[in-house]
Each structure stands twice: as C-alpha cells, then as structure tokens.
Image 1 (cartoon, helix red, strand yellow):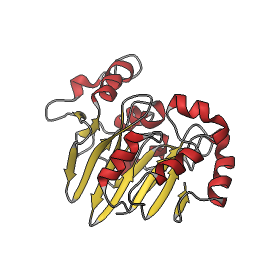
Image 2 (tube, rainbow, N blue to C red):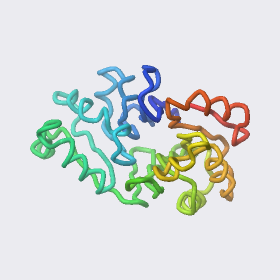
Image 3 (cartoon, rainbow, N blue to C red):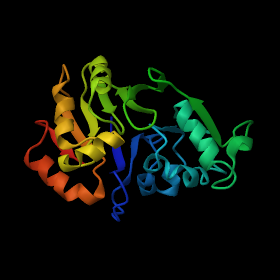
Length: 249
C-alpha cells in the first residue's frame, strides 16, 4: 500500500501543508474529506470515486461539498460516500439541504448521478478491486468508525477520533496483526478533563491504549494534534515515543 496522508491536523493551523483529516488509500479511494483534500489537483480529485467517512464532525467532512461540485462533468460517476446512518443523516439535514449547499437527492439517481450514499455499520466490509476496507466501532462524542484496510498482505488501521478504553482495546485486538496503526493525540495531559469530555487522546491515554493491546503494531502513526498544542505534543512524543517505531504526523 502507498498511503498518502493529505491532512491530519486536529484543527485550523494556518499551515497549507497540513489540513484536516484526509487519507488517500489509492487514486480513487479516500478516508475522510477534511481540508487536506485540497492538496489534490482538480484532475486528481476527479479520480476519487469512493469516500469513506469516519464521523460527522466538520474537520472530517469540510471539503466534501466543494469536492463534489468538481464532479459534475466527470466521466466516472457517481462518487460513493460510505458512512454510518448518523453521519449520512447529518449530511442530508445540515449540509446538503439547499441552504448550506445544493440538495443532492435529485442528483443521486439515474445515469447522471453525481453522488451515492452507502450506509455502513461497524463490521461492514467493502471490497474494491484487491483492497478490503472494514469499518469498526470506536468511542467518540458522536457515532464514529475506524477503518481496517488490507491489501497485498499489508494491514493499515485508522482509528479516527477516539479515546482509550475497552471499546478501542476490544476492536483493535479483534483485528489481529497490524502493520501500521494510526492513532490520534489531540491534547496534552494537562487538559485530560477536556480530552475525556470530548473523547480524544492525550499522550498518557495513547500509551494506555497501546499497552492494552495483545499484539503491538509494527509502526505507530500519531495524528490529529490540536494546533494550539502541536509544538508541545510533537516535542514530547518525539523525545519519549510511545512506540519503538513512532511517526508523529
């Protein structure tokens, strides 16, 4: 797998090189549609046919409406958006409602369909060519899934926004061997109360989550650092990495 992290910031950083969450699995598949999607050229955007959303929060869906508006005359429609029922309902009611952005229901059927909403649940697996993408439950402040991606003997796992606890431990242990595990670390430990209320990680919670696993991943990618605390978190996670093979994105 040649995974491209187009964006992984936990907020608005003013850094054009690191927008909010968008992960490209291959030219036609992305996970989440945060502002990092803007790193793709128009031609590259038109190659994307499958969008897997983890949850409804703005930093994970911000670029979806304008991305879709680039697809009107694409030769390879529709774009399929896979998401939990809660996420799809929020998109229909709050984004594609005719006030915030054009209402897409009239554009999801027939030969000229631009968009297809595909409801998924935890445990749902989608096979696209030789790639298998499976949703699994994680604990966050809204219904959220992570994704387990298998391709050519490699296993990549993205846990989305989440917090350490029994749900994450059970789900990750059930996935077996993991080559690359992508886990968030949004706040420093001094803001543990905020992290627990918003269901995000701190460095100590990240270590707790890793310690609870039966098998350690071969590599850990740390993501979703909040811009206000990024320098502090990056220094700490680099000096005392939570895993022997840690990459702080």
